Image (cartoon, rainbow, N blue to C red):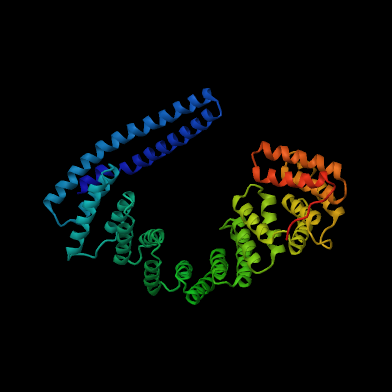
Amino acid sequence: YNLGNMISRPTDTMFEQINASRKKSTELSGRAKALRDTGNLKQARIYDQLSLKHKNQAEAEYQKARTVLLLAESHYRKSIEIQPMHAWSYNNLGVSLLKLERIDEAIEQYRKGIEMDRLSLIRKRTPILPYNLGNALLKKERFEEAADAFKQSYLTHYTYENALNKALSTYRRLGKYNECIELLNAHLKRHPEDPGAHQSLSKYLIETGKVDQAVKHIKQSIDLAPTNPLPHMTEGEILVKANRPAEAVESFHQAIRFNRQKHMLRDDNLQIKLAEALSLAGRNADALATLALVLRSNPNHGHARESLRNLMKQLGHTPQAAECYEETLKVIPDWIDGLQKLAWIRATHPDPNVRDASQALGLVKNLSSRINNDPIVLDTFAAALAENKQFPQAVSAAKKALKIARDEKNEDLARQIEDRLGLYEKGRPYRENR
């Protein structure tokens, strides 16, 4: 057994090098493919050669490690032959087999080791065997068995938090939230002042509809770690799910405040969560301003753009929407989407008290950088010109918008622009239907 350990010990470092070389090979292969896709074949061949070099290095190192592990395997098997009750021989044999990618054999050895450990009367049981079994089962995507193995590992030794975290993540993946709740309650009986456990438990409780208990545990987490932004963020998420958005807004504000001191979370994601809570609380202008600020610093932020689209769709083209856009533009005067939407409302709303021809034209002229290439902006420009009775110019702008929409194969937009163009040619402005 000891000789097997001495022989196999260097393979940990060897496999770090193997995995690093494999990762580098995959990364370089990806770059080569990207270069080929852009027609840069010469540069792609260079990356292909580098990728192959790292792949060959990994394979050569693996063959060295394999020779060592096969020797270690023989010693562990001899140890088991001499002392069949020695649980650690089964464990270390399983580790070697796993490195050799003989996963089913590793699982078998871990299970035998767990049984020998159970039968042993000499010492306390080890959490390592079921933990390693869980990791091997994950490699075979046997998630339910893996979760149960991690649970067994944690219940064998309540201080082994790696096993607890693996059990929770695997049960969560399976949607088995009650198992997560059971484990965390067991953990909190022994560690009642663990703020992370209270926070995690609150998330599973809200998923199972236990709102009051979820709120209770997240408040305990905050009491134990008042300046940690994570429990404040979780409190906000729970309050949103509990249909208490006004309270959630305050929680997200607190999370943002403490995060600026500790830098534990991404500020832009917190801002988006805040915006969504503001919208649910009926504070749409504040929500728009928050999202627009995120997009001003990162125009390509996918989540922020999606949230903004959803909010703008929800607002529609109502007078209330116009007020929200105006308030937001006071904060961010160069917000392109807001300028376009407000100009559209002022140019096309059926209520004359909402329309404002002069403002509509002024707003869309602020989008001059896009007037010649964006069909939506050109369409809005045409509507504003028509509202100002500048019909020849409106026809010209609409025709440009129509051509671009067709070139972009945006048939829905093209049909709408074509209908509006017909009105302008007859000397009539466009009015949105309500």
